[in-house]
Length: 199
Image 1: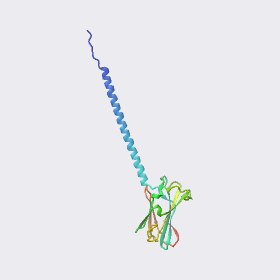
Image 2: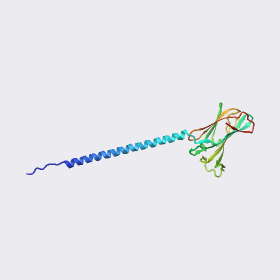
Image 3: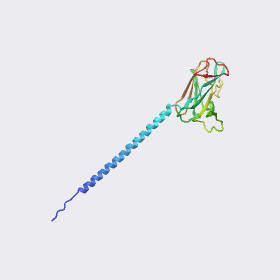
Image 4: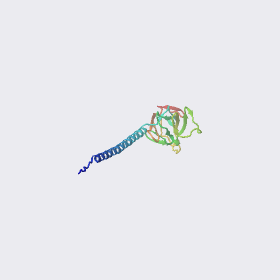
């Protein structure tokens, strides 16, 4: 009489294949999770670096001289200067820029509406008709005139008292990015209605 022998070789191979497939699937899922976490971390790091660079660098720079107009003998009146984008700078919304004029004793802050602004593109004056926005962009320059104001007046704000040889600072603060500091000293001799370039 023949004897039946149970052969489980094939079943053992099937079990090994199932276990191997399970390991491969788990490894694939783990690899996907790790790669996703790596990509996310890299993206966050890049975003932080970009934000840091944008905050640490100013998009504005001075273009040309700073001119003061003497409103009286020994008294600075209007302050005029030109702004443009720095190299590689992103467009700046000038309506959100503030201007602070400070001396050792006092300071006054102006908004964009408190100053006179004249726009130029490619050296040509931009009229109101072609001034479609208040964004300072490449190849554009804006002339800023900070008014002296009337002592005790409310519109425009009164300029801090700047006399001959007084140091003063103009701080231009955009909505995003570092501020632009302009440090100057008033001329030694100021005559009424005369204009002076200051250094």
